[in-house]
Amino acid sequence: MDAVAERSREIIRQGSKSFAAAARLFAADTRADVYKLYAWCRYCDDLIDGQELGFGREQISQADSEARLEFLRRETERALAGERVDEPAFVGLQQVVARHEIPARHPLDLIQGFEMDVRNHRYVELEDTLLYSYHVAGVVGVMMAYVMGVREPAVLGRAADLGIAFQLTNISRDVMDDADNGRCYLPVRWLEAAGVDPGAVRAPANRQAVFNVVSKLLNIAELYYRSASQGVPALGFRAGWAVSTAAGVYRDIGRLVLRRGARAWDTRAIVPGRRKVWWGVRGGLQALASVSLGRRRATRPRSPDLWIKPDLC
Image 1 (cartoon, one colour):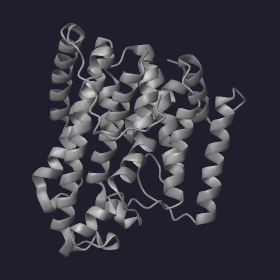
Image 2: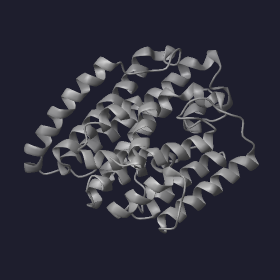
Image 3: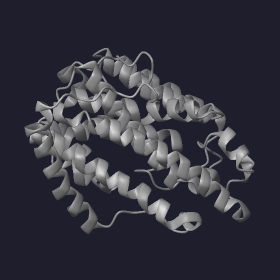
Image 4: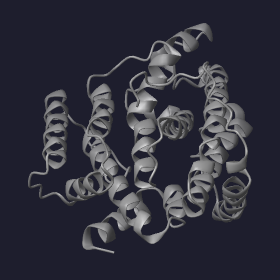
């Protein structure tokens, strides 16, 4: 593993213990590129949010946020064009994009997601929340699929579904933390229908109503998890194992939020280590069944009721 991959592995180990556990299940060459792609995503996210590996938050002026966004866009475009870049995160991105022939529009779609944060995009309808989820996570699933050797448009759609499901789970878990930072990704229409002012999500009196909205969002996430599982048979065993394990762990986060009810945000919802091990075992069995039996079965068509970015493929 080269120096950029080693550094990227340490970033994922510190920045996302859930994803790091699943990433170890990839074959060595795939794992190194997964680390690099994650490290670039983490670097961009941290720079925009003023965090370090997803933790803490510094106060950033609007002008500084705009400047950081422009820096990310410029350096990403330089990396995609094959120009010299010095920051290791962009070096890793450049290597991964070139090796797997990832279309340039996919990394730039992620930058557009950060732009939605910088410009304080308002999420009025569910489709707005889904669009954001695609830009900050669904497209990451698409790029990860390229790293795993996938090119078929139908399978890329399932990869986007998994990323969207992950982000909907993250939004549900982090509602109160986001509110502390002046952000709300829950659909405004849903909150208003529940009698909650979007600016008062943090109010204790609204906790049950907010949970009711979050439970609806997690039900939507479940539809995307189910759709994403249909793409696993197109992967090899090791990739399918990693993806199935990650999906199981993230689904558990959502289930924990649902079990806690209105007390869901008293402490951060975290899947314990023993559950991750259990999902690793179960993920392996699911992947084995998918690559042996799943490929013999006709894949169910993707539901036309599920939102998808129109120009994904």
